[in-house]
Every structure is written in structure tokens, then in C-alpha cells.
Length: 343
Image 1 (cartoon, helix red, strand yellow):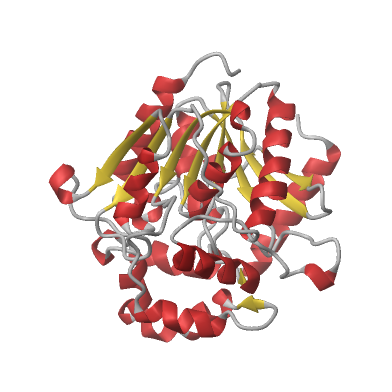
Image 2 (image 1 turned 45 degrees about the vertical axis):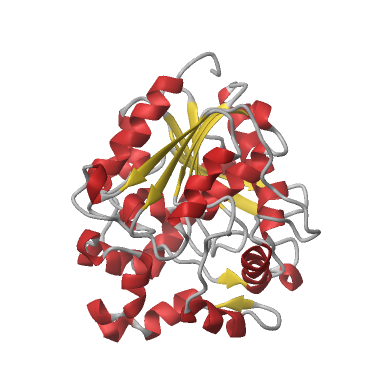
């Protein structure tokens, strides 16, 4: 049963969502069992959403500039729902900087790096899930940066992870070719504060389907337009400039490094499924595939037409596109094979 504090947190979250004007109410099966506040070691208050099940815990971690809606926005396109229906105890984390997270001081609201996510936010989430469930380990599914955070967490505490699935998550950047969008991105990362992704989304709304960014982040054939409009409104989070600058250092060094130049990717004997998308224009598919060169118990699966899918998916559509009916079963099948003694 949720505690009074957890219940209050759920009510606050619901009120905020209603105030935001959610374009389509969440059906009853999509409402979390409860939402709980999690305090990090350095004083941030983040949130975990739980979709309770009788099985082992699985933690879902979103990507850069995203939030929990990438995993639970609508019933028919929801990895959280798909996992819960198979008996998993599902938890979704929101990382610092999301609109519902609370910093220890307004001065540090946007003073955030990838290292902060990896050292503090992930630690607080993993500890909270294991404490609440009594499990010794959890399973992890991460999209994009959410998978990269798994690699970083495995370099710190591999003993807490039973298995992991990463989707479009590179562990190196040796094959990345910098497009004009990244050159523009470099200019936007200067100074302090944030890149206002949510406001930019509103400003670009009149472009509708013609918005060139949709073709950059996804295969348009896999986008449900009604869903995409809702996700653009609610699933985006403003991007802290220090995180963006750190991402640029990865492109320059060809490696996933911390702010001190140390490689976050270290071998760990944990079962991994790495999914890469042939049509991905955000990260290089070869850099995703290279992950299995770094981890001994790693399976790589290419998402492409040649591998039996309807088309070649892009970066976000394996998680929130109409192609999820072909992708989710891969995730579920792998995790099912890893069920064991972690709970």
C-alpha cells in the first residue's frame, strides 16, 4: 500500500497533469499504482512511478530531453503496460531537470550533467526500487541516454542488475557523422541555463507534419500523428546546457566519458540485449552495435526491414511509434528468459 506521502505525491502529479491540459486522459490501466518522491544524495527530489506486479522489478529509464511519458503515454503504445501485463513490477524514473523534479536550490536548477544522472539519480532510483520490493537485483530497460546510463551504472554497481535492455543507446561515438543540426546545437549550448525544448516544440507546432525534426528523430511512417502531437506537448523536457555540452565532448572524444575524461563503459558480466535501428539518424547504428564488443554477455538485434520489420525504424519509434508491436515482444522475450533468483 502507498504511504500517505506517496498518495499526496500522486494527487499532486495528477493535478499538475490536469492543469497541463493532457490531450487524452489516461485510461484506468495506465494510472500508476502510486507515484513516490525520491531524494538523491545531493538533495534533488525526483519521482518514481510504479505499475505494481507480482513479478520481478524492472526499471524504465528515459532518454535525453525526455520524461516518463516515453514509456506510458497511451495504453496501446506503452512499454510499462506491456510489461505489467506480463506480470512485471514496473517502475519508471524521471531524471532531474524534468518539470516535476525539485532541485535543492533554484541556483542549480539547470546545473546538471550526465554524471549527476549516473551517480545520483540512478543510485536513488535503484535503491528505492530494491528497498520497496525486497529484491536484490532489478532489470533495466533504457531508451537512448537511458540505456547509456545503464552502461554507466554497470561500471559502478553491476551486482544490482539482473539484466538490461538498451534501445538505440550507443556506448561509443566512433562512427558518428556530425550533421548540420549538431553544428546548430553547439551554438545553443553556450552559457548557462537550458535549451527550451518545450517552448521550441510549441513554436514549431504550426509546421505540423512538415516539421523537419520528425524526420530526424523517427521514420515518419511509424508515427501516429495524434500520438506524436501529444508526445511533443508532454514527453519533452528542457535540456540542461551542461548535459548538452557533455554530449558534445563524447562526439569529440569518440567515447562515453565523464567530465574528468574517464570512460563510463566498463565490462560487466550482466546479460544485455542491445537494440539498434537501421534508420536511426540521431545516433550511429554502428556505435550502438559496438556495445556488444564491450560486454561479454551481450546480444545485438538490428531493427530493420531486412530483419523482418515493416520498415527501417528511426530513433524514437521503437519506443513510441506504431512499430512497437514488433519491438516490445523482443524486449519481453529477452526479459522473460532472464527471470530468476533476483526476487
